[in-house]
Length: 87
Length: 87
Image 1 (spheres, rainbow over the protein chains, first blue to last red):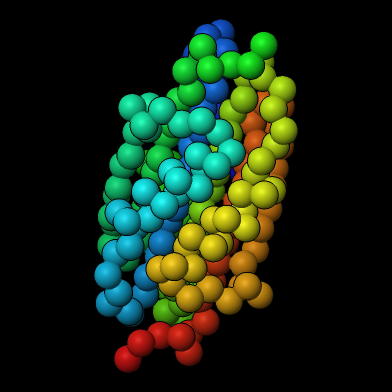
Image 2 (image 1 turned 45 degrees about the vertical axis):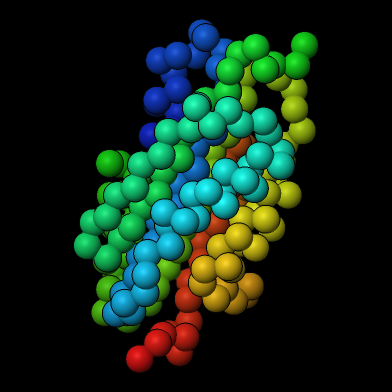
């Protein structure tokens, strides 16, 4: 799986710091329809949903929004602080 | 962006059918913590959140869950029916 390789290659560099990371990617390809782009609004909802399962520090959320032709991509990268770890 | 290339390469094959697609990938790298895996539960919440913005046919949602070492990846692929298109 190409994406998994991409994700894993990134994390190897900092493997020794034992940090915990979460990456969310939403890619929407729209064809002929001229819908409003909902991805900017969606990012807040996504963070809210993930917060039900893990504690997220809003300062540790890095958001990027790309658009290439008919493909919109929302990317959320979340790093969890080490002190949050349960012993 | 490697992931974007991966996504776009898939859609070229069916570009003429003018289908609309949505792909969501959640990748969680956990380090030393032994938390329960919340990704299976998260998939329902994600579909619920996305449904606020676009009509999703549950039959058109393809879910896969991968685990490789400390990296869990949830992948949702949603295809929208053509008849759903607004004229």
